[in-house]
Image (cartoon, rainbow, N blue to C red; front, top):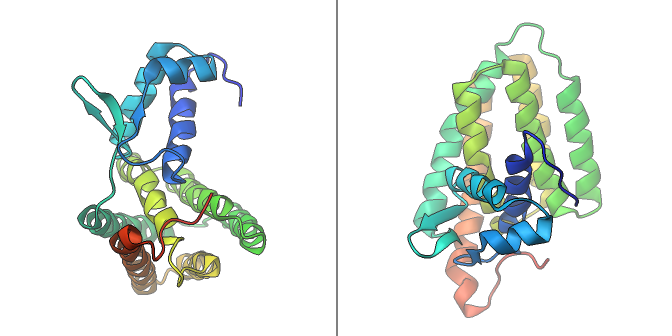
Length: 227
């Protein structure tokens, strides 16, 4: 990917690095060197520094004195906390979305179709990207600043959790597809109770799988899906 100066350059760098962290290509506690990233991407060190600040707000890196940016280590307690926060935010968000008059469902249906194709191809990264896009479509439709900002800020950590869960033997890409299909129907029907139930159950299962992967990684039973 080539980078050129633009208003969104730092966000694009953050997205690039974030994708590597979510997929496990950048390992926990790995140091991200500003100068090295700037050289590899052909951008200024200042743009990389701004991108790292964005990643810190997305809970993917820590900025430490004398060490710089370090990829955060995922712990079971952090997974549980992230899942709990995501459940509350998503429940509120999709319930509000269900109350939008004349909601245009076409963008959501298109994303679900893209997700179905990714599932058919066994493309974990493609499924996770579709999940991100599904939420972004909701942010655009709801036009809510604070709630959308909070949810999109936490979503990268949630996608990292999902990628971790994908290493569990019980993980099935089709579960995410079925969840989004059913969630969209509940939103269209304005069924707020069903929305909350769906979000709670899906996130609880994914959290359980991710925690199990963390707890068994040390003995070599299973872990993240190979890249």
